[in-house]
Image 1 (cartoon, one colour):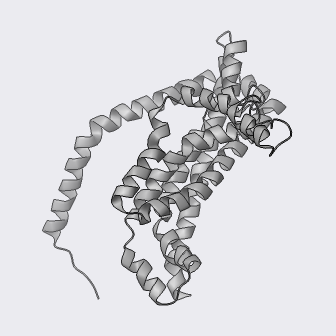
Image 2: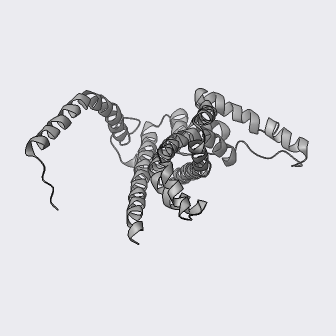
Image 3: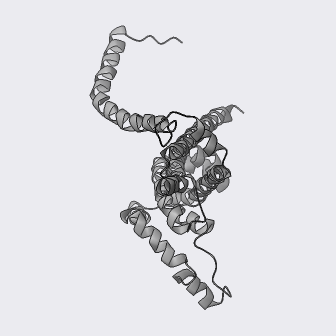
Length: 295
């Protein structure tokens, strides 16, 4: 069956799209300048020596350093570890919030969003107080007899990961909760009435319909985590060095803008690659969801 479209209506639709695009052009121009000009400056700076001469030596020096690749691995471990924990904790929590009564959900959401109302530096030092060897958590563990001596919970990868998850979890939860809240409850009831177990309902109804929210939350967490600086710098205690702290030390210690710019470009490339991988995963998931009824 062929559907014909009135040419006049199509022309009106095109004019409407052009009109709304023209309204957004000033904002797009400003945002474009704010995003593109610093990147172009960093690219130019990466080819300059401290004396202002053009060279590719900065790339050779940075990419041949073992510290760079160690920082890259640490960045990936922190980012992916934070994302994995946020998915494991945030998805069931979002489902519980979406299933709760509106008044209860609003109260619980206020508690979830409470960390965002506090400055990140204050929260990070709060975790430092809680996690250090003489902190409240270790005092409770040793006082109750669960551990014979204080656990190393800070100035290492574990403490850094805890602090990052604490910051990222609300950012992940918001889009997932919004997606799950919009799921029609009748779909879940229909699946249950046909004998589907809770796991089958999760796999065939809830997860496919909330995949967009999980994807959006994952992108937010990864983008923030890859460039995170304050939490690794404080809770890592100099022992956890992702690319962000390596950039800061390259500038503060050596004032080497060329090498720091190369590290910044490496960070941008890493973000772009992860973004492409996430888009590919989302398309694959969407394709599998479409093909599932025909299997």
